Image (cartoon, rainbow, N blue to C red; front, side):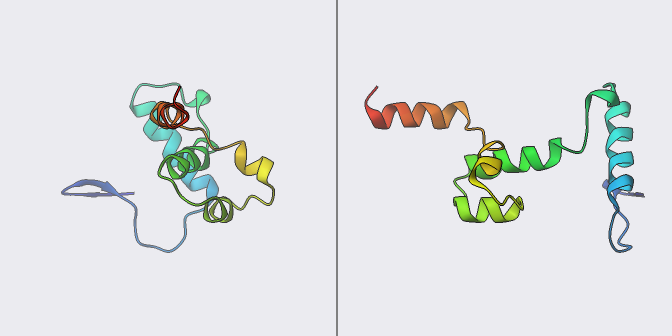
Amino acid sequence: MVLTKEGESLRNAGGLSYSSLRELLLDKIAKLGFDPALFGMHSLPAGDAIAAANAGVQDTLFKRHGCWKSESAKDGYGKDSVQRWLEFSKDLGI
């Protein structure tokens, strides 16, 4: 991490290892006053998957991006927003 006029930024020094990213994430979580033991890297792909599903990304792209080989693995990550549930109910005439 480097400090810029706009705040902090990642250095452009190539790739970032899993352990380095995890360390950065947990450090920021602690600085925000949260218990880092309650968070992990699993939250990142899960959050991306939920955002992609709610944005209407096609299942095939969604599955490929998450590197999920089965429908059940992919479906375990997708959680519809309340808005999508309401739209679905409205479409059914409920």
